[in-house]
Image 1 (cartoon, one colour):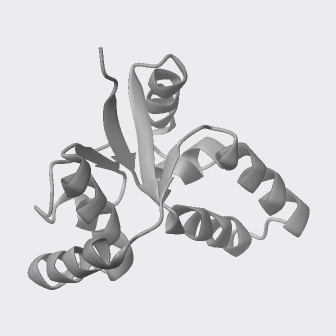
Image 2 (cartoon, rainbow, N blue to C red; image 1 turned 90 degrees about the horizontal axis):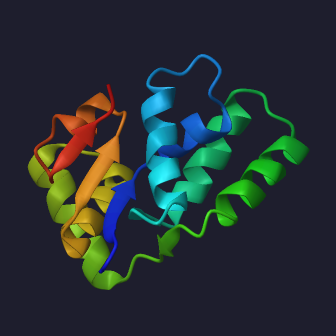
Length: 137
């Protein structure tokens, strides 16, 4: 039996690391629990790490706290995909077609490549129609 992949974006990962003041935290942790139980395989492009680190920094986290958060993310056994030329080209097409940032479009392009759902808490990405997207909440 194969485990189905699910692409998560940075808005989900931030909820795992800084749940205070965030909405839909229970739903985000349910995804993490399903991953830990082997029911799904979490996947994301590598820039998820940079986006999460930046989000924590913008909320005045210390360098030590950001480094700890990075260690936690790296320990999740999430599949992190380095975008290749084809993924980036598809991301550009999705960004233009659906009026997304390139950063968001890479998540959608990866979900398209893996033929799976993309889970986000970002309204613009969720409403874009760029991919089978499930919004939390």
